[in-house]
Image 1 (tube, each protein chain N blue to C red):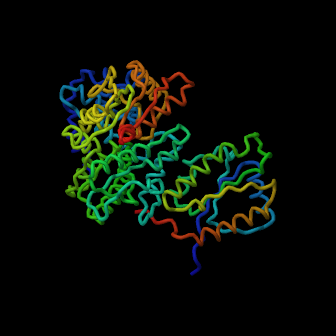
Image 2 (cartoon, helix red, strand yellow):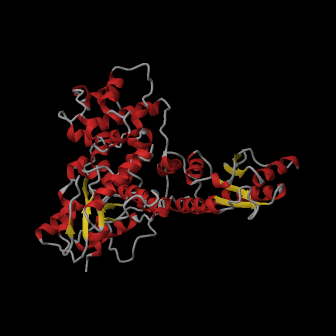
Image 3 (cartoon, rainbow over the protein chains, first blue to last red):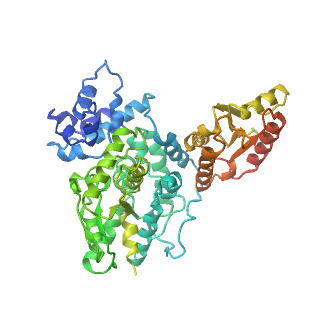
Length: 378
Length: 137
């Protein structure tokens, strides 16, 4: 299923000009001088025997900033994923953050015949259409809110907001009570077997329910279901849309409207939604649909948006913390009261920086876009 | 052929918890070989990752075995582990495996009989749990 050399060729890494522009824009390289994308590429392509395992590969955030800047759009993050898969298959594993809880959780979620009980949070007022070939893919929010509850994380608020927005838009949908994690974090850290187990379990679930369309609020889930699943498991003909792609056109056409929120807000583009999926305008259009909301852009936004310092739950350390503090400082500098994002992982990582930096990180309120927009529903 | 005993992992604190395991051995009590004892310096060393890893590796149930309240060697008592214990039970519920698969026990120093009772009782409970932990896909 995986042909490493072919995959390496597909990343266009051989086109690397050794110009170093990737290093200049890389948020990790700012704080970790040893992390240099072009040197990682050289070491692998020359099969540097003095360094059988390159431990710097675990520092990449997969933020795609380097791809944005590269003249040849060399897919360095995908190259890193291949190197990680190689290392993983040789038994080399990264330092798992949170004691490996997320990794174990993902592996447990891939158990056959698993019957999860994960819908207890679903509000009574949400109208589900049964039967329906459109689903809202919830993602790992119910688990995140338990694991990161001590950070004040409430990613389910974003999910509830998303469901209310879909109800208001009169878009019929249902939810699957046994969906699994999309597996992106396992894929990013090189655990392809683990990823495949989750992907197959999800695809079987979708096929069993005759799913034709998936709407999700999670950028990682969106990209994985839309791009990675078809690439690895073949195209099942399922349309995958991010919530903002569904709601924004309705606001633009006047078919749906939002109420008033008297706040100043800025928007943090999640790397996966922005640079990977090229969804930059729709979230801003939703914010623009909120009457009374003053929207201010951060110094680095859209294609140049700084990563939240997230990683696939590995190797999280001082470098990530500095990036998170830098992003929070950029948000604070806009004068905004709310930092809006659409990614639960961004929310978790930025709130972690706020909570665990001894008060040195700006304490701007962080909210999911769907949660904020749903607050403005009458 | 007799039914296979469930896989039980016991995270035992190095102090009172482990002394109960040793006392049970010295008293000649027998328990199934599928019960694995992992010694930790204190139950506060335990976090969600370790417990979930045990389940990922095939445990049917996990016991956290620590000192009685007020008797912690490090004067931490159950403060840290309680948070991890409760979070992990919530996760087990979401997974549909059931929170009953994780229990916490505080036994007095050298209580071998209490340990035996705890283990055999837990094995019986785990055996009755439905569904059993499913096999890996």
